Image (cartoon, rainbow, N blue to C red; front, side, top):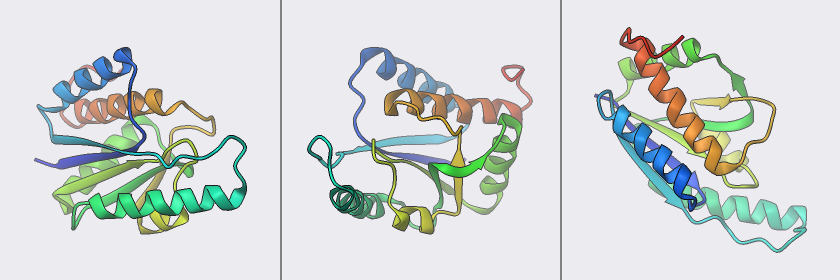
Amino acid sequence: MLKIKLICVGKLKEKEYLDLTKEYAKRLGAFCELDILELQEEYLPSAPSEGLIITALERESEKILKVIPPLSHVISLCIEGKELDSVALSEKIASIEQRFSKLCFIIGGSNGLSDKIKKISGDRISFSRLTFPHHLFRVMLLEQIYRAYTIINGRTYHK
């Protein structure tokens, strides 16, 4: 059974999103071992300079690197990543499951991910060229991982 770790920069606070996260985590329990880790986002003043943003991203990247499980396949979620449909994501997860015992998805904070994290990633995936709120995107990712497993296992959830 694949061990999936979601590393998320930023914390969920809204009850509705916490409930949805718990629901998809429960559903995924039939297919994988899921661990969701929240890391503190670096504080930035309003209207920060590009230099401050880069420094914050580097600090966040150090936190992320410390918690990536050894021998994991790493997927960064970023706008410049490759867009996949649900079937392609299911094929990617199935392929990763054949070669690795651990898969790590990384969701950056409001300023994204540092180049350092993107470079160590085995894959970069984008859900869209649109920007999504962090809390909504986490639920969307969990739903798509669940959908991928229903496709892999021939369940009728995917339409």
